[in-house]
Each structure stands twice: as structure tokens, then as C-alpha cells.
Length: 62
Image 1 (cartoon, rainbow, N blue to C red):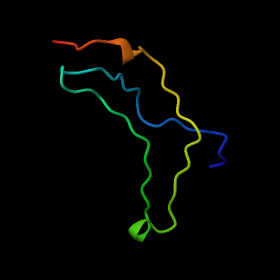
Image 2: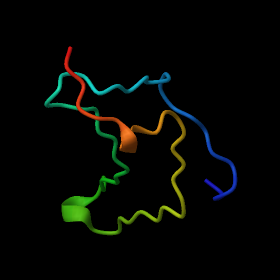
Image 3: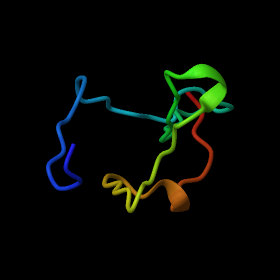
């Protein structure tokens, strides 16, 4: 890893609202392969999300 070139992993996931009381969530995380998290860290400089703006969407009922 050089901090400049990034390799996508997995397939594209189309996230939706699901049921009226649920929604998909995404997260950025790190887990250490060493004991009890020793020598592990993560440093996210940015995260980009693009898609429909759900901030203005009222409750969906399916």
C-alpha cells in the first residue's frame, strides 16, 4: 500500500431504504490481526458517497 493507489474489493452494492423502519448502513473499519489490537490503526482521509439524496425523503411505506 502506498496511500495513492486504491484497489476496489467486492461487487457494487445498491443500497436502498428497505422497510419503513430499516435502512442499509455502511461503515469504514479496521481490525488488527495482532493480539488485542496491538500495532493496528486506520487513517481515513476522506470518504465519498454519491447517489440519491435521501435527506429530503419522507418515510417510505412498501
